[in-house]
Amino acid sequence: VTNVGICGASGKMGERLTRLLSEKKIPSLALAGSFNAHDKGCSSDMFKGIDVLIDFSSPNAFTTYAPLLSEFKKAAVIGTTGYTQEQLQNINNLATQVPIVMAPNMSVGVNVLFNIVEQMASQLPADFEIHVQDIHHKEKKDAPSGTALKIKDHLQKAHPGTTIPVDSVRTGDVTGEHTISFYNEGERLELTHRALSRDIFALGALRAARWVVTQKPGLYSMNDVLKGEL
Ligand SMILES: NC(=O)c1ccc[n+]([C@@H]2O[C@H](COP(=O)([O-])OP(=O)(O)OC[C@H]3O[C@@H](n4cnc5c(N)ncnc54)[C@H](OP(=O)(O)O)[C@@H]3O)[C@@H](O)[C@H]2O)c1
Image 1 (cartoon, rainbow, N blue to C red):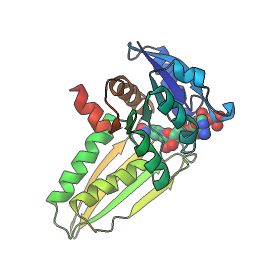
Image 2: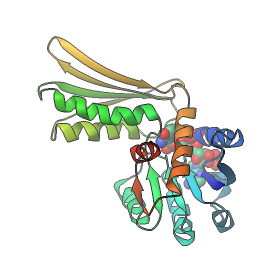
Image 3: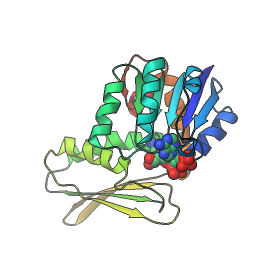
C-alpha cells in the first residue's frame, strides 16, 4: 500500500481526492494524513507516515512542507498553480532530492491537448493568429490559469517570438475550459477542452502519486506519468 498525504484537504480538489481515496478508486493507495491552511502548518509525524504528498492548495504552502519532504525523502505530486519564478526555482531545487510530478492540469484530455496544439501550430503558416482563452469559476485565484500558460509555452515552441494573447474569464461555477483558436482570413480552427468534473484532476493526481513513488529524484510532468503507464 502507498500512503498518501494531502495538502489542502478541505478545498474543492482536496475533497475530491479524499472521496476517491475512500472509494478505493486506486486500490493500492490509502489516505494517511492531511492538513490545510487553518491547521497552521504540517506536522513531521504525518510526513513520517506517508510515501507521497499530494498538494492542491496555494503557492505559499510549499515553503511549509518542502523541508519535511527533504528531511524524510518523500515524493510529491503538485497540482497547485500560480507560482512565482522564485517559487518554481525552489521546486526545481527540491526535485534534485526527491521525485516530484508537477502539472497545472492533471486530466488526460488536457495533456493530450498540450501535445496536439504544438503539432498543430507547427503545421500552420506563421500568418495565422493564435489566441488562447481560459474560463473558470469566480473563486479561482490565478489568471491566466496554469493550463493556459502551459498551452502558450507549447504554442511558442512551434512559433518562437510570436505574441499569443491569453484571455481569462472568471464566471459562475465553471470547472475549467480552454480554447485555442487559430485565425486567418476566411478561416478559423478551434480546439476546446471542457472539464465536466473535478474528478478528472483528482484521479490524474492519484495516478501520478502511484507512479511517482517508484521514480528517481527529478521533476516530472503528467505526460511522463501517462507515458510511464502505457
Ligand atoms: N493541476 C490540476 O489539475 C488542478 C485542477 C484544479 C485546481 N488546481 C489548483 O489547485 C489549487 C487548489 O484549488 P481548489 O479549487 O481546491 O482551491 P480551494 O477550494 O480554495 O482549496 C484550497 C485548499 O488549500 C488549503 N490551503 C491554502 N493555503 C494553504 C497553506 N499555506 N497550507 C496548507 N493548506 C493551504 C486551504 O485550506 P483552508 O481551508 O484552511 O483555507 C484549502 O483546503 C489551485 O492552485 C488550483 O488552481 C489544479
